[in-house]
Image (tube, rainbow, N blue to C red; front, side):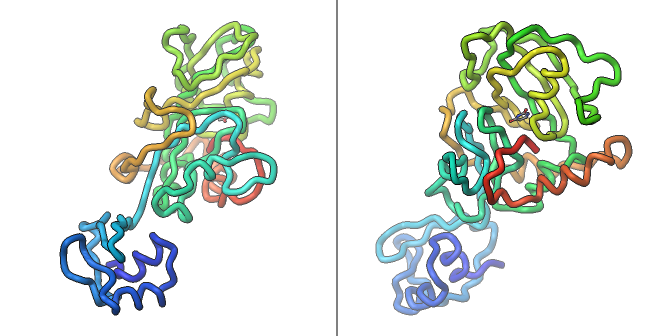
Length: 276
Ligand code: URA
């Protein structure tokens, strides 16, 4: 069970020494309730998030935190970057900010649904190929695409798992999809897995060029049309992904090692990456 002092230190970025002093001085309490003078007090996970009052300011303490972000075009999926703003910068002030990690990446020029969590094992489930989470993208294209021929493979030999590819009517386009001048057609594509620039490379292989790309769904989660680019909302990813089961080992295993590495990778650094 988490201890009160560790929870406060973790959530508010205080040192444990300071938290111990605050508790012992009677400056930490429940709102309108008694002081919590024992820094080692065990907090039942079921009672989290909980609100504490520290020097008459209310703070919510979380054990874990998850959120769904509408990543805008022009920010990189990284924790730090020398040249661009990052999707992480846009989360400043979120609970447990320091521990949030993205489930995969979207390109600099891709917008859409990006999930973040403080929980490593959950992140693994959400991104590892064996869990086969489908991702739905809407694309603004220059040029018509052809139906993938049997055995369709990308230029590096990777065989994409495309579960749906359909034309998209303008009125079905998500408000988050950028439709630049030069767009001749729109499409919706669902893929399982997420190699580097996979959707862009798929359309290139089918004879068209991606001018705008937006991820509109990840597993059962859909990017709300009311969530503006750059905004995020809290959600319980546990209830969505914790009960998922991996598919049996078999076809596609050859691709797993590098994708799993990518999924587990800390997003430090400057790489402008693809989805995972
Ligand atoms: N595929 C791409 O090509 N880019 C993305 O950002 C995500 C998937």
